[in-house]
Image (cartoon, rainbow over all chains, first blue to last red; front, side, top):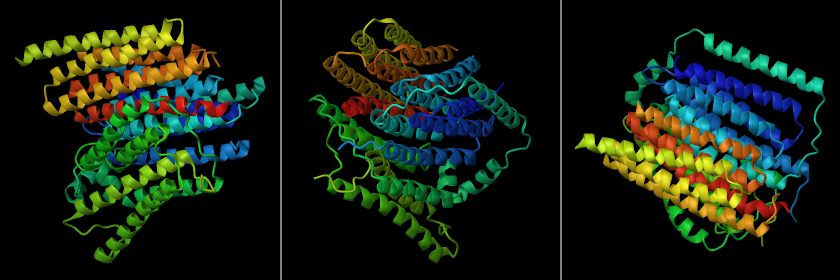
Length: 91
Length: 299
Length: 97
Length: 83
């Protein structure tokens, strides 16, 4: 029972929760949150599959790292869109 | 004994994610997301990936939480219409089915990992000792270049939409001594992470996010407000990072005949130069993504 | 010598973890937000400093010591500042949202 | 052995922020929970780091320690934007 076995199920749980919430809630912010959970759940599964007894595989680590950075860009863009749709302007 | 730690952590992650997605209150959802990010960084540490844990820490704790909170405080709360029971039941069953199928597929997937052999074989020649930095900045440097382009595209989109710039309110006089300690530490840690990225976990992305966290603290303290000058400087930095990376790619093409193939002997110099430019430009991009860019510069 | 240091380190860390748990309990069950803040800042300053000090004793390397001391100072500082800011904004507004 | 036990203790302290997150009547309580979770994570990283002597963990703990205030600051500074 190495750690990766446990975290694969945790990542899959995150993916399931995110998909459920994406399907049942209309609030924009919560959908952006669900997307973040989906992406980080997949990243966890990818990282867990890269786990090795002696050393962890470096290439999936690079992918997950790139994924996390891109996720910030996507979240910022989505939130800007959400605010535009929401028609919220301070002035 | 450490297995109990992993099981508790995995359950904690799924439970926190469930509460974060389940709670009606927006601030609670965002805070739940931040706490889940902390636990996920711990799980990356347990999975033997300190580089990824560092990135999740710097970006999750530093930036995504503040970004989501900024929007959560500004978006009008949506009407709480609960979707019909049938739809919820169907969604729940499909989601559970999919996640179980995913877990089962990944768990039973056969096949040996062939990347470790390739990476360790090429590591000696790559100019750095940290395998993750070697992959990111040498073997698959093309992905890293395109990743910066993706961040830049997000920046362009935010620039076009130009959401309102958040106005932090005055936080009293205790902020100044706090910032006087935190900002130098952020800059110092950023340099530390950047420089040690070649040998131990660290690198341009973690360093850039760390610096962006420092900019954010300055912004909240009311010092780095998005005046036209700060905006121009930020945009210049963002563009400079991308430009330097692209020029370096073309230069390697000219020097060695193949794109992004460093002239052997001084790979390390190329990697450190590109990483330094990346750190500053990622920090500027993340700061601009948070503040947004007004169309008419703030008077 | 290192065995004694190891035991002292473990003792310090245990006290730190116990303090952290008590503070977490305080945050959980104390009635008002401001009293919870009181419990939280104890965890930040005292609890974590003990853990960092104990870890430095157990670890014994100098660079680890520097990192841990900086860690303890940073958490104590941001804990205190955040406690003050949250209380200030909470009290000035005075009604739960 | 004791270090594993201590790691479990700090993890329990981090997860103890969840009830406050769920119950917390005011938004300030929720930010409080995030701060406690942040401190608990730093403590867990320190305890894990002493065990297997990797300096990478202390750097992660340092990053968390330095950035633990950003989310709370964002809430306190931008809170008035809503009203």
